Length: 241
Image (cartoon, rainbow, N blue to C red):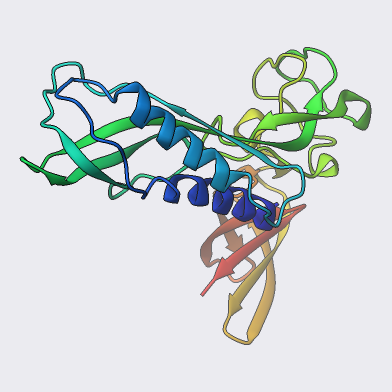
C-alpha cells in the first residue's frame, strides 16, 4: 500500500507542478479571471493525465477562489508554488506570486486535489462494532486524497477487524475506521523482544495492561524488572533499542 500511495501522491504533485507556466495578464480584480483559471486547470490536468506508474489512476484538480478582499495589480506572469507545510493532496493551497507586473504580489489559492483509484469498499452500510469478513467488500473507485489517511488497499488486512464507527455502502476504510486489535489482556504471559542493530533478544513476562495494537504497554519480567514496549502481535511485545 505504501508504494501505491507514493505513486498516487507523485502524480498529484506532478499535476500541481504543471502550474508553473506563463499566464495571461490578470486584471485588477479580487479573483482569478476566467482565462487564467482555465489555463491553470488545463495545464494541471494535462500533467496529471501523462503516463505514470499507475494505470487507470485519475487526478482531478478543482481551483477555489481568492480572498474577495484582495485587489491585485495587473500581472503578465504568475509563478505558482507550494507553501511550506502544504502538499498536493486533498484540500490544500497553492501560492501565486506575480513576477512580471507593476507591483509584486503574493496570494494563496485554495485547491482541491482528488486522486481516484481502486480500493476495497463496503457492499452495504454497517454499524459500529461489526466484525468484518470478505463478504462485506467489493471493489470500487474512491478518492484516496479525501482524508489524511489513505484507504486500506489489502482487503485481507481488514478481515476480522471491528468497525469503530458506522459506515455507508461504497465507503473505503482507513485505519481510523477500525478498532485497534487487542493482542492480549492484562495479566497474560507475553513474549518481549528487544530489537537493535543486527540483534534481537527475547524474554517473557506478564503484561501489566491490555495490549492494544501499536500502543505502549508495560511488562514485568520474571526477574521483576518492568519494561515498556509496543504491542505488535498475539502475546508479543517489541522494544526497539
